[in-house]
Image 1 (cartoon, one colour):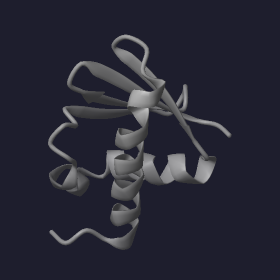
Image 2 (image 1 turned 45 degrees about the vertical axis):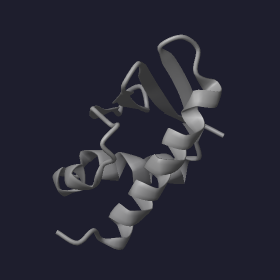
Image 3 (image 1 turned 180 degrees about the vertical axis):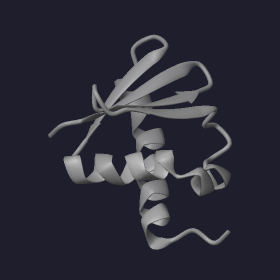
Length: 86
């Protein structure tokens, strides 16, 4: 399936998080903050079942915890938490 513009925006944000998380990494965890708008776009991408086929290979799992406003991204050797902030 061809990704929609919204999915492309989510994928672009995911790529940015994957490039940035090593700078914030402490041990096997990393925390990255996005603006509210960007976090919501990435959340939509994470929840969209059609987006799974577009995820980079290094992403093993992605989940959303709406109550805590955290998106977790499991990559080899690191759990990345993406928080809504800024």
